[in-house]
Image 1 (cartoon, one colour):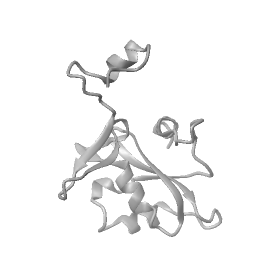
Image 2 (tube, helix red, strand yellow):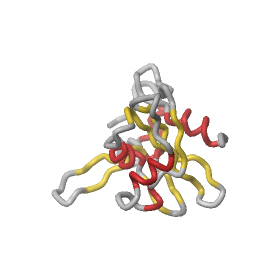
Image 3 (tube, helix red, strand yellow):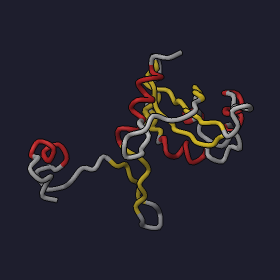
Image 4 (cartoon, helix red, strand yellow):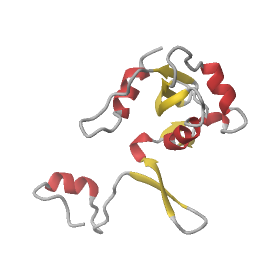
Amino acid sequence: MLGYWNEPEKTAEVVDAGRWMHTGDLAVMREDGYVEIVGRIKDLIIRGGENVYPREIEEFLYAHPKIADVQVVGVAHERYGEEVLACVIPRDPADPLTLEELRVFCADRLAHYKIPSRLQLLDTFPMTVSGKVRKVELRERYTTAD
């Protein structure tokens, strides 16, 4: 890629001297040789030195019968740097998921550092005009919340 049209500053942010474009995507090479996008660098949670990919946890949590939609973000934690927060839209608002139910569901199926230590129930997620969840807003909103 040569760069963004008439935007040299933006081009300089993502295209290096070797003409490689840094997309901000996180990817892994699978055993079968395919590359799989596992998330975005800015969404990566580092909890106690362990890398946590929110998308992996979200895909796992979608299997819970009480979860209609879920977004996982990292929020500041004094000891671990970040902790895992699951923002959940319940399938049935009259029978919402509890943090204990979430932990039991995750136990023995996720590494302990990937299990959400906080749960926030929501009616909707903050969205961009293009229809993407504003994870930055979720992080900011709940970093200071108890």
